Amino acid sequence: MDSFPLQVLALIAVGFVSGFLNILAGGGSLLTLPLLIFLGLPATVANATNRVGVLFQNVFAVDAFRRRGIFPARLALFCSLPAIVGSFLGARLAVDIDEVLFQRLLAVIMIGILVFTLVDPMKNRRREELVITPGRAAVLLLSFFAIGVYGGFIQAGVGFLIIPALMLHGVDLVRTNAVKIIVVLIFTIPALAVFLWHDQVNWPLGIALAVGNSAGGWVATHVAVKKGHDWIKRVVSLTVLVFALKLLFAP
Image (tube, rainbow, N blue to C red; front, side, top):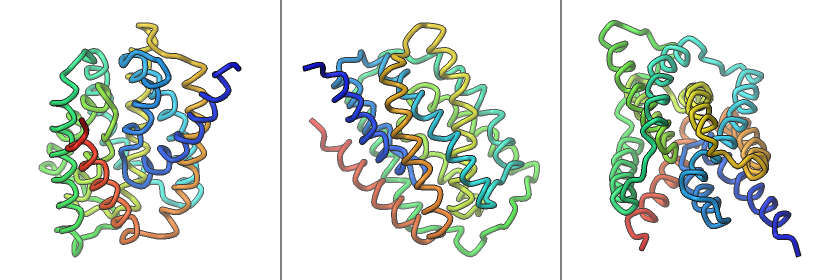
C-alpha cells in the first residue's frame, strides 16, 4: 500500500493541532518538525518545509482576526520591519547545531516565559493602543530583530518569545496573538524564499501540512477572541510547561 496518503492524513491531523497551538500560544512546530523528520525528510528540509504550513496558517489567521475586529496593524508592521531583516539572516545561518544543547536552551527560555506569563507583571497596565515612545521603539526594534533571527533559523517556539516581548509593554494576550501572527506571516516570507532558493522545500508534504495548520489556526483565532486574555493565559502556561518538560527530559 502506498504510504503517501497516510503521510498526508498524519500531517493534516498534527498540523491542525500545531496551527491551533501556534495561534493561541506557540510551539506547534515542536510537533510538526519531528513528524516531518520521522516521515523521512532530512532535518534541513523538514525545517524548510515546515514554513509552508506556518505561512498558510497565518494567512488564514490574520484574515480571521481582521474580520473579528482585532487588527493592530500599526504595532504589527512596526515590529515586522526588524523581524524581516533578522529572519533573512537567520535563514541564511540555518546550519547544523547540537540538537541536545538546543533543546535544553529552548526549555530554559520557555520556563522563563512560563514564570513571566503566570506573574503577568503588566496586568494592571493594559493598553488599548501601545504608544511607541523613542525608548520603547528601540527595545521593540532590538527585540524583534533577535526574534526574526531565531524565527528564520529554526521557527519552533518563536511564539514563546513574541508573547513576553509584547506583554512587557502592556499588550493583552488577544492583541498580542494578533500581532504575533502578522509578524510571523511577514518574516516567514523571506525565510521561505531563502529555503526555496536552496531547493530545500518538499512541496507535497508542505501543502498537506498547510491544510492542517490553516484549519487549526482559523479555529484558534475565533477561540482567542471569544475567550479573552485570562483564558489564553492558562493555555499559554500549560502549553509552555508541557513543551519545556518534554525538551528537558527528552532522551
